[in-house]
Image (cartoon, rainbow, N blue to C red; front, side, top):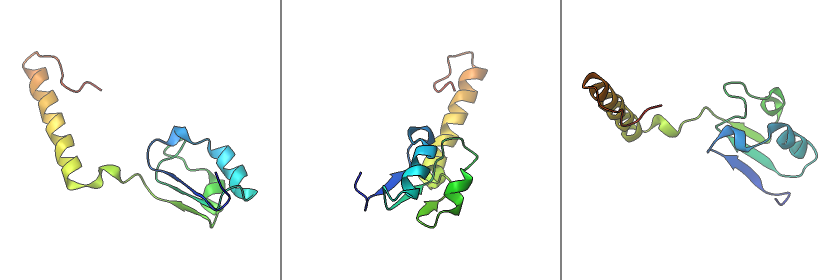
Length: 92
């Protein structure tokens, strides 16, 4: 990445090596980072918490009404399937 780049991770925490990110940020390898997922969730690297060129948020991807509604429908579908002795449509 270029030195003026911002690393953004809103996908999965474990795709970013946070120790390597901290080292890169400290040496100016990238301009900053924006994260809402973390390598060792729910813990956040203390070094990232102290950096002014890092924005940290809780994972908000599922906060939309439509997503939460769909999640609720999946739960109901699983409960009904279990009660009726069918395979769960979304086993987790």
